[in-house]
Length: 124
Length: 124
DNA sequence: TTAATATTTTAGCAATTACTAAAACGTAAA
DNA sequence: TTTACGTTTTAGTAATTGCTAAAATATTAA
Image 1 (cartoon, protein in one colour):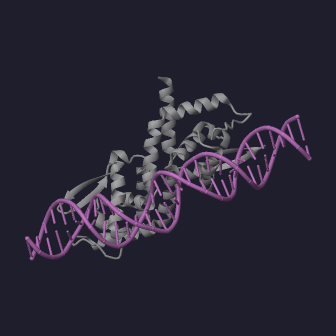
Image 2 (tube, helix red, strand yellow):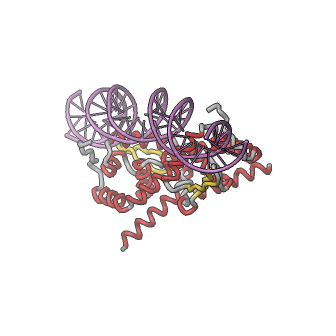
Image 3 (tube, each protein chain N blue to C red):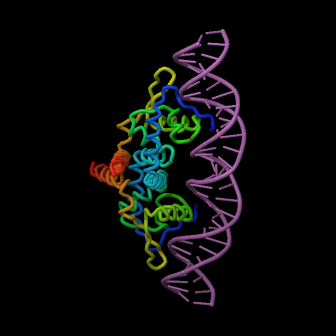
């Protein structure tokens, strides 16, 4: 860094405004970065899709479906839970995970369209 | 892996169906994983937001706004370009980057609402 | 109680990430 | 030409990721 590389033709007002915008939106940007980051992993996106499709699932079944060790699945689920995208419910010795609807609004449209595509393909 | 951990209570039909769904949607899942992955980084999400807000920007200005070295910005832009989320246009010695609209449909609603929130906050 | 099942946590690993500084590359101006 | 500017690429780094195997935890059944 340090060497300030500002173009001769740069518009200082535009740049200042952009910096202010980012500052003001900082919280929202961080929050959404986190949601996209959690969803931007093949295993986790599949988990989110499956929870959307099936309602709820347990680590063991997910492990079988995704072909990842149960421990690995559990770690993904913990991340998703830390990010408040999923919640869990214990029934006997098995734990059922499901989506936290209000916190996945950003990716919900995608999950829906994926499911629709899936159904369409099933028909044909 | 290897040790097949299938619950005694598991529904083999449900599991089989889920595996088939994932197989069928494989391409779409991969594609969207990549978009979310590209967007799930603080610097890149800010770049996408700024390109949406301003129309086009060059690496040098982005470097100043984001407080990241020009080289670092260039690397983010290359990733976004490889993922076809942005395109570039050379004018003299400066390169202007802008969004590829048809390829950011998944995250567009978010960018729009961010910008709306920004404008609302500006008023108050 | 003991044994089996389902999950979580831990330790360890190879691969990837995001960054910087510096070198290399183009383009424009003196 | 030489110099400056804007960008990209490279080399190197510390930190993070995603996975496994194994240990630890908790619940249920024998």
